[in-house]
Length: 340
Ligand code: KG4
Ligand code: ZN
View 1 (cartoon, rainbow, N blue to C red):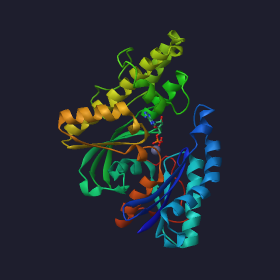
View 2: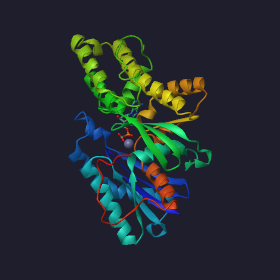
View 3: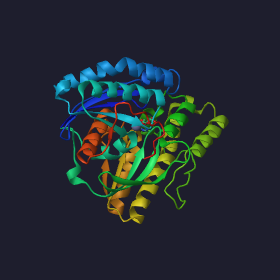
View 4: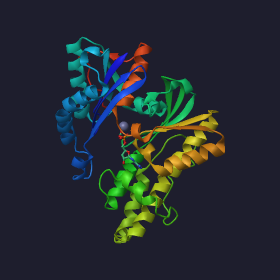
């Protein structure tokens, strides 16, 4: 089957064409340069950019895939969670297209798509569920941090989540305090590579608590207090690198420790990690080391499919369609707070 997928939940407008588990195209128009000026995503600007980008990005995805709208069997779209008006732009465009083509429309959960993106391979880009194993899965993005027990493909339950800020939000907000541009995560990753992670000591929130939840706002506050005491520190390039490495180490250590501990407790042999923060080099490296030591296999989403993209929406939609799930009506509403 051939599907067109659309993703507009935050600040990336993306369209992809997926056919029988293969990704034929995946076009992403990122708005980060626009939001960087304001230090974070401005919802009104995001909506305006989605409206501006939706048609060209969709046309490009079809063109790159060599597919015409008449060849589509269904349209898939992110229904939630996300910024309400951003979701609305994508959902209404997808509904209009599905209605005019008289094809079914599938409403997809953004985090569920991140969850299964760990099973997407690149070159050639395709889903790889033949290797599927029951797993403990970490979803780390700008909006959410979730630990999920995946029993089978499409059968999962949330073990724990962040009680306040998401891991990506913690990168972005602490980076902003240091004077880094939005989104600070990738830049902190880059700077931390040449920094000393033991230079400054920050808390590892909830790391040893007997649950699968996370909390990152306390870490953000301690970085704020630290910078109030040492306001000139980010002006020294090496001190800034050390600070980035130290903050990153605190975030990553908690994520790795709690994920591996949950996998061992629940007797799962496989760990996956996906979402924008899964691009982080320290997280990838330390998860790999911890999993190797614990005798666990690890599946990391490819960096290309970690940050928001429509390919992951299409891959999950196709899987759902084959299981008789996910179809919505052409006048369905967005689900901005949809729980996983
Ligand atoms: O999944 P995503 O594209 O959007 C959401 O659904 O939120 O994730 C974006 C988040 C941002 O907070 C960004 O700073 C973070 O992922 N991120 C990173 C890295 N690349 C992206 N954080 C740390 N290190 C990175 N290399
Ligand atoms: Zn996301």
